[in-house]
Length: 484
Image 1: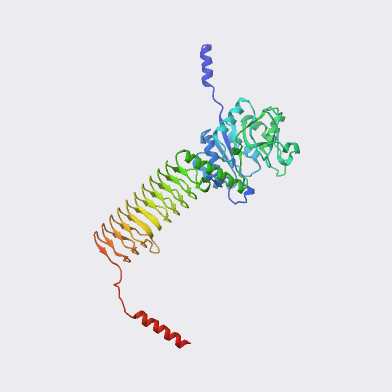
Image 2: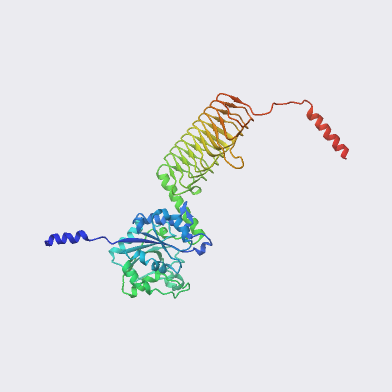
């Protein structure tokens, strides 16, 4: 082999350093005073941990992401398991340093590892990539991400070797900080990059000589410094992205930040949102251009709304697909439903799961639906319950109509064919079929199928007894007089 070919062969077999991401998600979140895992508390409509995983997956493949779990481990695994990440169990939670100790086997095949906090959902992929690139360019053993906070209380301070140096001498926790050190605004975020071989060569030097008798990852800065390893810091200009969620107030603050960011994103895409601070719009919601969202609207889960719609105030819509040109009047509640284009719903309609409202259909005030299909152009405008019902096109359902779908044991289906007219205050006892173009007389109780183009009357003939009320009043008066 020639020198040139040997050189090319050497170059072709060189590999890029293997990078993993470890996410700390084992803690209890004691200050939340909650029986639920801290990382599963929701902000912006999904678990805090889900945001961190999604961001990490923009940097490395999910198979290279290791979520370190402990408290309520099975619940955490179930909540985010479909993300494709790996899990490491920290059965006994003895601190952040201990978390990486138990992850040694999983991380040892890698050259570098980025450590993220599972309770800090605002971190961006761009910042993670900058942290990784800076770590590589500095040929450092440990790189920490820092930030300047106006109020650094409660955070560990970053003590650099000098004001202009990238190198770090130590991280001092607030409880141990001197008065001059407490004036330092540069804080340790809890995000790190490590050289994996050097990390595990020195991690055994961590001590538990602290109030909680735990192994702190922050102490690795001093440990590596004593071992003449290079420890550096890179400061993010966006301090908010490193904020964690240690208290309920912090969770609420992060939720507000995420939701306002979602509103701003939608408005940039052509959606009008009046008073966005009053709206609750989850991260996964999609809305088409020229749709108007009025104040105090909640759009939850995977709701998808088309273009040129108007969603009026106080409506709560979850996991529902809404077509173009739909008007949702005030106070509607919808779950797991579908509304086709140009329909009108509300005010105060309740769509329970499985409701499918056709093109140009109308559902009006105080109408409740469950597991129904309402055909094109059909209407149910007032005070009606429709459950387990299939309704054709051009049907009018009068006020006060009820489909009686439950016999106390089983649910049964009502079918109303195209063009039928259901008179007000009708009771349709399922299973029953109302034929095409037929009429149901008002106040009828229908228990049998009605053929097409028929009139069905299911009520007693009216009887009038003249003078009955006068005689009744006279009898009542006589009874009272006798008693007195």
